[in-house]
Length: 324
Image (cartoon, rainbow, N blue to C red; front, side, top):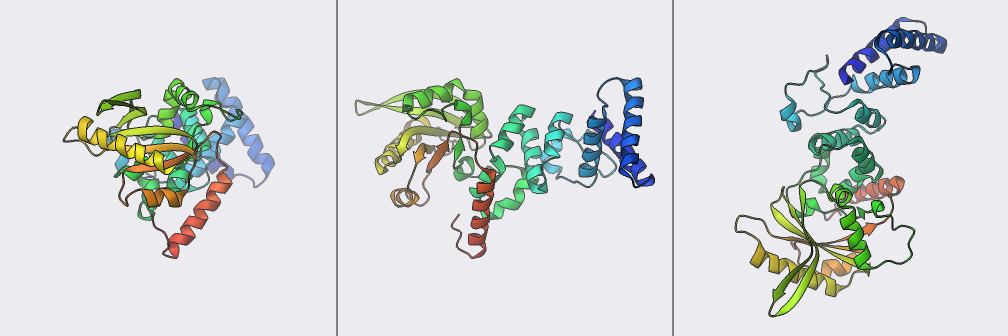
């Protein structure tokens, strides 16, 4: 259907280019084509939808995207420019409205790689996933995002800051406990896995282990297939304390020594907190630590604010002040 719509869009645009340069002509053309297609093929060809089809052609007739990440779709047909379409029409209706080409390519690649439904694509876009990853990505990887999607090569590539947890429905609550936060994450596990990103599998909640006859519990345990390692999450209400980092270091050490297999990679620890002092975190943790502190927020982010932060970050990088 996507390919058929592309061809219809081509016909509309070429006919308009041959016709009169009046808005009335274009509207008349769409009305006549709508009546003809509806009579012969049924619903789906309203004037409004034909406008979307025309816009789809205008966007994608001049669009190219890297094919290397889509090798499993080599048998798909191509349009005259060599471009292939991997998603549904509903997906492309959303994608074609993203003006930034790199951002549009990123979401298309991630939607294909992760088999996102339209609802999942919309949620990831609304949560500004692209801009959040840009802010936490090494500068030399930024250009690769629009060609390969999210790149998972080392532990820091797995971690976001912040994590957006709007699906928990806690934004209107002035108070809630760590247990309530944890329970809601488990009750919304599918949404949480979507927010975590590629390759995560849930392992356990309140995973108990015993050391020197003392019992400890890790809030949430996941396994990431991309890096082949355990990922431990500890939830903190309020500001992060240096004692919290020490506790997570112990959890990570335990998993590395007693749970991790020889052929697996070192365990990653993530402290999910409402607030943190980055300088305190940096001072407490070793330089190449596998422990990360990330804020969480209970509402969708302000994209304009994220874009402003990204602009500041780029300026710092250009001035050789970027330490990422």
